[in-house]
Length: 116
Image (cartoon, rainbow, N blue to C red; front, side, top):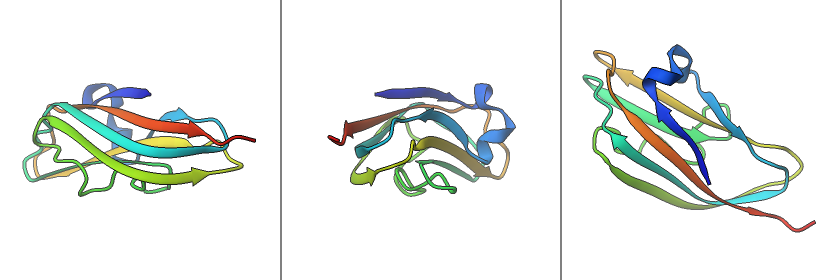
């Protein structure tokens, strides 16, 4: 499931607070999170892209899971069970030093419905 092309130009200022990519249905299991960095992020000091369902938007892909300054595919296997709520999948990008002027990634999730 491709959630969204993640482009700094489209996301604007709120990306550092976390933006909602999609709301998933209730009763699911997330088995894999993937970030495909198509254009390297180029902030002067650090680039941090995270994805998640929690307030910090980092429980699916954390700060150390993606090398944002290098194009490539970064994946993490997990088994996150979410019952009784419709989880919002959020992405967040933060940086230090001079602001990034480039950077784009696609976010994919493997999701399985829990039988009712």
